[in-house]
Image 1 (cartoon, one colour):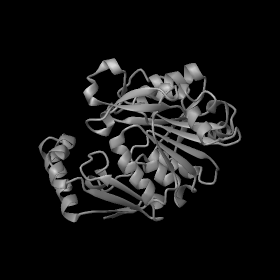
Image 2: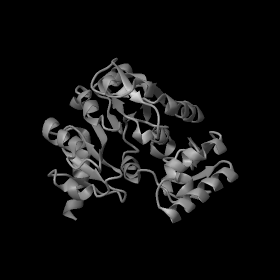
Image 3: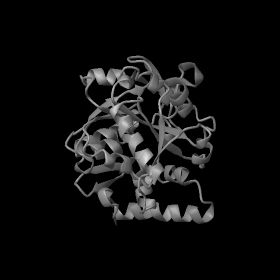
Image 4: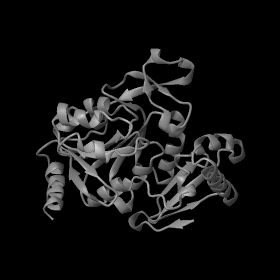
Length: 317
């Protein structure tokens, strides 16, 4: 099954029988209720026997995913899927810019695979993921792509080396860092924290090294930003998620009010627009079931001059 996405052209391989079963189930559920695919995937998991499918990108990069994962098997259920196209188009603009990519909340490594690929300029990257269950496939994807990015099992937050607890049961989107006393510890897994600044030290980056940090850490974005104190004094750009369900826009509010940094929205058509007032997010974040990606960077930095120039040019057209 092949899809043409230009630079992100891909095809999906796997058991035809199993992929057909996933598509059939998705169609049946859609006709009946239009929802519940995640529960259905759990029900047929024994039939799929932890099978993997693989997304093959045009340049030879590969990404494996579990066939019963309702988040990633959208590549099969919705063959016109383009994952986070706004980030893809944004990073394509930066193909010829030298930077180190921090994939924080990497999941199975989609962006780590692509950023280190030919299509996005073969950047140096580190994938950070807290869930050990997800980590197994992340590591497999690292190996499948010639180990061209590093993998750390860590939880991103403000501090480095602190033992936290992390939900491990349920779909990946429902997992998040919690306080030890907030839930039954039998459903939690211990994981060591790290910070953006600690990652930069561990990679022995200098102040002249540019960094792009992608934050998708299920509600811990503010804590992760607090742990990037030193990184945010250099030429660093952060792609962060502000979820549609959060009508207070807490993460963007923190960036604007506490950090005093500019914020830009990025869209699937490649448009970049500066967010002048927080109220603009009331309109932009229209769907409470999905996350929205925004970009920020220190004012006056190289990244800021570049992105502000693009936004200003679009506004003058």
